[in-house]
Length: 322
Ligand code: Q46
Ligand code: ZN
Ligand code: ZN
Image: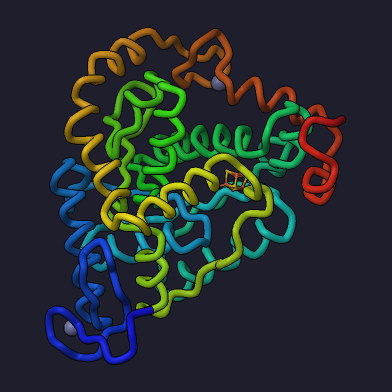
Protein backbone atom coordinates (compact mmCIF):
# COMPACT_ATOMS: atom_id res chain seq x y z
CA UNK A 1 0.00 0.00 0.00
CA UNK A 2 1.25 3.52 -0.73
CA UNK A 3 1.54 6.06 2.09
CA UNK A 4 -1.67 7.89 2.94
CA UNK A 5 -2.03 10.94 0.73
CA UNK A 6 0.48 9.78 -1.88
CA UNK A 7 -0.25 10.73 -5.46
CA UNK A 8 0.00 9.07 -8.86
CA UNK A 9 3.24 10.00 -10.62
CA UNK A 10 1.38 10.63 -13.88
CA UNK A 11 -1.90 12.37 -13.02
CA UNK A 12 -1.43 13.38 -9.35
CA UNK A 13 -4.71 11.70 -8.36
CA UNK A 14 -4.66 9.50 -5.19
CA UNK A 15 -2.41 6.47 -5.68
CA UNK A 16 -3.52 2.87 -5.15
CA UNK A 17 -0.11 1.21 -5.36
CA UNK A 18 3.51 2.07 -4.63
CA UNK A 19 6.20 0.52 -6.80
CA UNK A 20 9.58 1.12 -5.15
CA UNK A 21 11.54 -0.27 -8.10
CA UNK A 22 10.02 2.49 -10.25
CA UNK A 23 10.39 4.88 -7.32
CA UNK A 24 6.77 5.97 -7.84
CA UNK A 25 3.09 5.57 -6.92
CA UNK A 26 0.26 5.07 -9.40
CA UNK A 27 -3.51 5.43 -9.60
CA UNK A 28 -5.50 2.46 -10.96
CA UNK A 29 -5.59 3.72 -14.54
CA UNK A 30 -1.90 4.54 -14.76
CA UNK A 31 -0.93 1.35 -12.97
CA UNK A 32 -2.75 -0.67 -15.64
CA UNK A 33 -1.04 1.41 -18.29
CA UNK A 34 2.37 0.66 -16.78
CA UNK A 35 1.59 -3.08 -16.76
CA UNK A 36 0.49 -2.99 -20.39
CA UNK A 37 3.66 -1.14 -21.35
CA UNK A 38 5.81 -3.75 -19.63
CA UNK A 39 4.01 -6.61 -21.37
CA UNK A 40 4.17 -4.94 -24.78
CA UNK A 41 7.87 -4.26 -24.20
CA UNK A 42 8.52 -7.93 -23.39
CA UNK A 43 6.51 -9.10 -26.41
CA UNK A 44 8.36 -6.73 -28.77
CA UNK A 45 11.82 -7.13 -27.27
CA UNK A 46 11.77 -10.91 -27.53
CA UNK A 47 9.55 -11.33 -30.63
CA UNK A 48 7.01 -13.29 -28.63
CA UNK A 49 3.74 -12.90 -30.51
CA UNK A 50 2.01 -11.51 -33.56
CA UNK A 51 -1.67 -10.75 -34.00
CA UNK A 52 -1.85 -13.67 -36.48
CA UNK A 53 -0.71 -16.21 -33.91
CA UNK A 54 -3.09 -18.83 -32.58
CA UNK A 55 -2.27 -18.60 -28.90
CA UNK A 56 -2.88 -21.14 -26.17
CA UNK A 57 -2.56 -19.82 -22.60
CA UNK A 58 -1.81 -22.33 -19.85
CA UNK A 59 -4.17 -21.30 -17.03
CA UNK A 60 -4.09 -22.52 -13.45
CA UNK A 61 -6.82 -20.31 -11.96
CA UNK A 62 -4.14 -18.25 -10.17
CA UNK A 63 -3.38 -14.55 -10.64
CA UNK A 64 -0.57 -14.80 -13.17
CA UNK A 65 -2.20 -17.03 -15.75
CA UNK A 66 -5.54 -15.19 -15.59
CA UNK A 67 -3.75 -11.83 -15.76
CA UNK A 68 -1.74 -12.79 -18.83
CA UNK A 69 -4.82 -14.18 -20.57
CA UNK A 70 -6.71 -10.98 -19.78
CA UNK A 71 -3.85 -8.74 -20.93
CA UNK A 72 -3.38 -10.56 -24.23
CA UNK A 73 -7.10 -10.33 -25.03
CA UNK A 74 -7.10 -6.67 -24.08
CA UNK A 75 -4.12 -6.07 -26.37
CA UNK A 76 -6.07 -7.62 -29.28
CA UNK A 77 -4.57 -11.12 -29.44
CA UNK A 78 -6.67 -14.20 -30.06
CA UNK A 79 -6.07 -16.65 -27.21
CA UNK A 80 -7.70 -19.84 -25.93
CA UNK A 81 -7.00 -21.36 -22.51
CA UNK A 82 -5.72 -24.72 -21.34
CA UNK A 83 -6.37 -26.05 -17.84
CA UNK A 84 -4.77 -29.23 -16.48
CA UNK A 85 -6.52 -31.01 -13.60
CA UNK A 86 -3.56 -32.13 -11.51
CA UNK A 87 -5.64 -33.94 -8.88
CA UNK A 88 -4.19 -32.02 -5.93
CA UNK A 89 -7.29 -32.39 -3.73
CA UNK A 90 -9.51 -29.36 -3.10
CA UNK A 91 -6.84 -27.05 -4.46
CA UNK A 92 -7.26 -28.47 -7.96
CA UNK A 93 -11.05 -28.50 -7.74
CA UNK A 94 -11.17 -24.85 -6.74
CA UNK A 95 -8.47 -23.70 -9.17
CA UNK A 96 -10.44 -25.32 -12.00
CA UNK A 97 -13.55 -23.41 -10.92
CA UNK A 98 -11.69 -20.09 -11.18
CA UNK A 99 -10.32 -20.91 -14.63
CA UNK A 100 -13.75 -22.02 -15.87
CA UNK A 101 -15.50 -18.97 -14.41
CA UNK A 102 -13.02 -16.60 -16.08
CA UNK A 103 -13.50 -18.30 -19.47
CA UNK A 104 -17.28 -18.58 -19.18
CA UNK A 105 -17.76 -14.94 -18.19
CA UNK A 106 -15.89 -13.83 -21.32
CA UNK A 107 -17.12 -16.51 -23.74
CA UNK A 108 -13.61 -17.94 -24.13
CA UNK A 109 -12.58 -21.45 -25.11
CA UNK A 110 -10.96 -23.44 -22.30
CA UNK A 111 -9.47 -26.85 -23.08
CA UNK A 112 -9.40 -29.16 -20.05
CA UNK A 113 -7.22 -32.20 -19.45
CA UNK A 114 -7.59 -34.30 -16.32
CA UNK A 115 -4.49 -36.29 -15.43
CA UNK A 116 -6.42 -38.96 -13.51
CA UNK A 117 -9.00 -39.48 -16.27
CA UNK A 118 -6.65 -39.39 -19.21
CA UNK A 119 -3.40 -40.79 -17.86
CA UNK A 120 -4.46 -42.78 -14.81
CA UNK A 121 -2.58 -40.83 -12.14
CA UNK A 122 -2.52 -37.55 -10.22
CA UNK A 123 0.30 -35.49 -8.73
CA UNK A 124 0.15 -36.82 -5.13
CA UNK A 125 0.28 -40.38 -6.48
CA UNK A 126 3.11 -39.53 -8.87
CA UNK A 127 5.08 -37.97 -5.99
CA UNK A 128 4.74 -41.14 -3.95
CA UNK A 129 5.37 -43.48 -6.88
CA UNK A 130 8.54 -41.66 -7.98
CA UNK A 131 9.68 -40.89 -4.40
CA UNK A 132 10.44 -37.35 -5.45
CA UNK A 133 9.09 -33.91 -4.57
CA UNK A 134 5.59 -33.33 -6.00
CA UNK A 135 6.75 -30.34 -8.05
CA UNK A 136 9.10 -32.56 -10.01
CA UNK A 137 6.33 -34.84 -11.37
CA UNK A 138 4.00 -31.87 -11.64
CA UNK A 139 6.37 -29.70 -13.66
CA UNK A 140 7.22 -32.59 -15.96
CA UNK A 141 3.52 -33.43 -16.51
CA UNK A 142 2.55 -29.83 -17.16
CA UNK A 143 5.40 -29.16 -19.59
CA UNK A 144 4.61 -32.27 -21.60
CA UNK A 145 0.85 -31.73 -21.69
CA UNK A 146 1.15 -28.03 -22.51
CA UNK A 147 3.35 -28.88 -25.49
CA UNK A 148 1.11 -31.70 -26.63
CA UNK A 149 -2.12 -29.68 -26.34
CA UNK A 150 -0.59 -26.78 -28.27
CA UNK A 151 0.62 -29.04 -31.09
CA UNK A 152 -2.55 -31.15 -31.19
CA UNK A 153 -4.74 -28.04 -31.31
CA UNK A 154 -2.74 -26.38 -34.08
CA UNK A 155 -1.70 -23.45 -31.89
CA UNK A 156 1.37 -21.50 -32.98
CA UNK A 157 2.40 -20.32 -29.51
CA UNK A 158 2.02 -21.54 -25.95
CA UNK A 159 1.89 -18.78 -23.32
CA UNK A 160 2.62 -19.29 -19.64
CA UNK A 161 2.13 -16.81 -16.81
CA UNK A 162 5.64 -16.96 -15.34
CA UNK A 163 6.42 -13.57 -13.83
CA UNK A 164 9.62 -11.77 -12.85
CA UNK A 165 9.62 -13.31 -9.35
CA UNK A 166 9.32 -16.82 -10.80
CA UNK A 167 12.07 -16.32 -13.34
CA UNK A 168 14.44 -14.56 -10.95
CA UNK A 169 13.93 -17.33 -8.35
CA UNK A 170 14.64 -20.06 -10.90
CA UNK A 171 17.67 -18.10 -12.09
CA UNK A 172 18.98 -17.83 -8.54
CA UNK A 173 18.52 -21.58 -8.01
CA UNK A 174 20.27 -22.44 -11.26
CA UNK A 175 23.08 -19.98 -10.59
CA UNK A 176 23.71 -21.28 -7.07
CA UNK A 177 24.37 -24.68 -8.62
CA UNK A 178 25.83 -23.40 -11.90
CA UNK A 179 23.35 -25.51 -13.83
CA UNK A 180 24.64 -24.45 -17.21
CA UNK A 181 22.12 -26.55 -19.18
CA UNK A 182 19.16 -25.05 -17.34
CA UNK A 183 20.64 -21.55 -17.49
CA UNK A 184 21.06 -21.85 -21.23
CA UNK A 185 17.38 -22.69 -21.62
CA UNK A 186 16.04 -20.14 -19.15
CA UNK A 187 14.73 -17.75 -21.79
CA UNK A 188 11.43 -15.88 -22.12
CA UNK A 189 11.02 -17.34 -25.61
CA UNK A 190 11.80 -20.85 -26.76
CA UNK A 191 11.41 -21.27 -30.51
CA UNK A 192 9.25 -23.98 -32.07
CA UNK A 193 11.00 -27.07 -33.36
CA UNK A 194 10.14 -30.65 -34.20
CA UNK A 195 7.82 -31.94 -31.48
CA UNK A 196 7.74 -28.69 -29.48
CA UNK A 197 5.65 -25.52 -29.90
CA UNK A 198 7.01 -22.00 -29.51
CA UNK A 199 6.76 -21.06 -25.82
CA UNK A 200 6.67 -17.54 -24.42
CA UNK A 201 6.42 -15.75 -21.07
CA UNK A 202 4.98 -12.26 -21.57
CA UNK A 203 4.93 -11.41 -17.83
CA UNK A 204 8.69 -11.58 -17.26
CA UNK A 205 8.85 -7.81 -16.71
CA UNK A 206 6.09 -7.81 -14.04
CA UNK A 207 6.36 -8.94 -10.43
CA UNK A 208 3.78 -11.17 -8.76
CA UNK A 209 2.64 -8.24 -6.64
CA UNK A 210 1.92 -6.39 -9.88
CA UNK A 211 0.01 -9.26 -11.52
CA UNK A 212 -2.06 -9.65 -8.34
CA UNK A 213 -2.81 -5.91 -8.37
CA UNK A 214 -3.73 -6.16 -12.07
CA UNK A 215 -6.35 -8.79 -11.20
CA UNK A 216 -7.73 -6.76 -8.29
CA UNK A 217 -8.03 -3.57 -10.34
CA UNK A 218 -9.56 -5.44 -13.29
CA UNK A 219 -12.02 -7.32 -11.05
CA UNK A 220 -10.65 -10.77 -11.90
CA UNK A 221 -11.38 -13.45 -9.29
CA UNK A 222 -8.43 -15.76 -8.84
CA UNK A 223 -7.39 -18.48 -6.45
CA UNK A 224 -5.32 -16.74 -3.78
CA UNK A 225 -4.23 -19.90 -1.94
CA UNK A 226 -0.86 -21.37 -2.85
CA UNK A 227 -0.69 -24.99 -3.92
CA UNK A 228 -0.52 -27.06 -0.71
CA UNK A 229 2.40 -28.99 -2.13
CA UNK A 230 4.53 -25.87 -2.61
CA UNK A 231 5.11 -25.41 1.13
CA UNK A 232 8.79 -25.52 1.95
CA UNK A 233 10.00 -25.94 -1.60
CA UNK A 234 13.29 -24.43 -2.68
CA UNK A 235 11.67 -22.12 -5.21
CA UNK A 236 9.70 -20.32 -2.47
CA UNK A 237 12.87 -19.98 -0.41
CA UNK A 238 14.65 -18.35 -3.34
CA UNK A 239 11.75 -15.94 -3.80
CA UNK A 240 12.01 -14.92 -0.16
CA UNK A 241 15.74 -14.41 -0.45
CA UNK A 242 15.29 -12.19 -3.49
CA UNK A 243 12.51 -10.24 -1.76
CA UNK A 244 14.88 -9.54 1.13
CA UNK A 245 17.51 -8.26 -1.30
CA UNK A 246 14.88 -6.24 -3.17
CA UNK A 247 13.72 -4.60 0.07
CA UNK A 248 17.29 -3.45 0.72
CA UNK A 249 17.90 -2.42 -2.83
CA UNK A 250 14.80 -1.87 -5.00
CA UNK A 251 15.31 -2.88 -8.62
CA UNK A 252 17.80 -5.67 -7.83
CA UNK A 253 15.41 -8.46 -8.82
CA UNK A 254 14.66 -7.00 -12.23
CA UNK A 255 18.35 -6.22 -12.80
CA UNK A 256 19.38 -9.77 -11.82
CA UNK A 257 17.03 -11.39 -14.32
CA UNK A 258 16.86 -8.85 -17.15
CA UNK A 259 20.62 -8.31 -17.17
CA UNK A 260 21.09 -12.07 -17.27
CA UNK A 261 19.00 -12.14 -20.44
CA UNK A 262 20.93 -9.29 -21.96
CA UNK A 263 24.48 -10.10 -20.92
CA UNK A 264 24.75 -13.78 -20.00
CA UNK A 265 22.15 -15.66 -22.04
CA UNK A 266 23.81 -14.82 -25.39
CA UNK A 267 27.04 -16.40 -24.13
CA UNK A 268 25.15 -19.64 -23.43
CA UNK A 269 23.29 -19.80 -26.76
CA UNK A 270 25.68 -22.30 -28.34
CA UNK A 271 25.31 -24.60 -25.36
CA UNK A 272 21.50 -24.56 -25.66
CA UNK A 273 21.78 -25.40 -29.36
CA UNK A 274 24.07 -28.37 -28.69
CA UNK A 275 21.65 -29.77 -26.11
CA UNK A 276 18.72 -29.46 -28.50
CA UNK A 277 20.61 -31.21 -31.29
CA UNK A 278 21.47 -34.12 -28.99
CA UNK A 279 17.83 -35.02 -28.32
CA UNK A 280 16.19 -38.16 -29.76
CA UNK A 281 12.49 -38.89 -30.23
CA UNK A 282 10.39 -40.85 -27.72
CA UNK A 283 9.30 -44.23 -29.12
CA UNK A 284 5.97 -44.00 -27.37
CA UNK A 285 4.73 -40.42 -27.88
CA UNK A 286 7.11 -38.86 -30.40
CA UNK A 287 8.19 -36.02 -28.11
CA UNK A 288 11.85 -34.96 -27.96
CA UNK A 289 13.61 -37.15 -25.44
CA UNK A 290 16.97 -37.91 -23.89
CA UNK A 291 16.40 -41.66 -24.40
CA UNK A 292 14.12 -44.16 -26.14
CA UNK A 293 11.24 -43.37 -23.77
CA UNK A 294 10.71 -39.78 -22.67
CA UNK A 295 10.53 -38.80 -18.99
CA UNK A 296 6.77 -38.22 -19.22
CA UNK A 297 6.01 -41.65 -20.67
CA UNK A 298 8.16 -43.21 -17.94
CA UNK A 299 6.29 -41.19 -15.32
CA UNK A 300 2.92 -42.38 -16.67
CA UNK A 301 4.01 -46.03 -16.44
CA UNK A 302 5.32 -45.67 -12.88
CA UNK A 303 2.46 -43.55 -11.53
CA UNK A 304 -0.54 -45.16 -13.20
CA UNK A 305 0.43 -48.54 -11.71
CA UNK A 306 0.52 -47.13 -8.18
CA UNK A 307 -2.61 -47.13 -6.04
CA UNK A 308 -4.10 -43.62 -5.69
CA UNK A 309 -2.54 -41.57 -2.89
CA UNK A 310 -4.58 -38.73 -1.34
CA UNK A 311 -2.94 -35.33 -1.17
CA UNK A 312 -3.18 -35.24 2.67
CA UNK A 313 -0.96 -38.29 2.91
CA UNK A 314 1.81 -36.66 0.91
CA UNK A 315 1.59 -33.45 2.93
CA UNK A 316 1.58 -35.32 6.23
CA UNK A 317 3.58 -38.41 5.53
CA UNK A 318 6.63 -36.98 3.76
CA UNK A 319 7.25 -37.42 0.10
CA UNK A 320 9.69 -40.29 0.07
CA UNK A 321 7.91 -42.91 2.12
CA UNK A 322 5.79 -45.57 0.51
S1 Q46 B 1 1.12 -26.84 -8.79
FE1 Q46 B 1 2.59 -28.42 -9.15
FE2 Q46 B 1 3.13 -25.90 -8.60
FE3 Q46 B 1 1.84 -27.41 -6.79
S2 Q46 B 1 2.87 -29.36 -7.15
FE4 Q46 B 1 4.47 -27.83 -7.30
S3 Q46 B 1 4.54 -27.40 -9.49
S4 Q46 B 1 3.56 -26.05 -6.38
S5 Q46 B 1 3.30 -24.11 -9.85
ZN1 ZN C 1 -2.80 8.43 -12.51
ZN1 ZN D 1 7.03 -40.08 -24.54
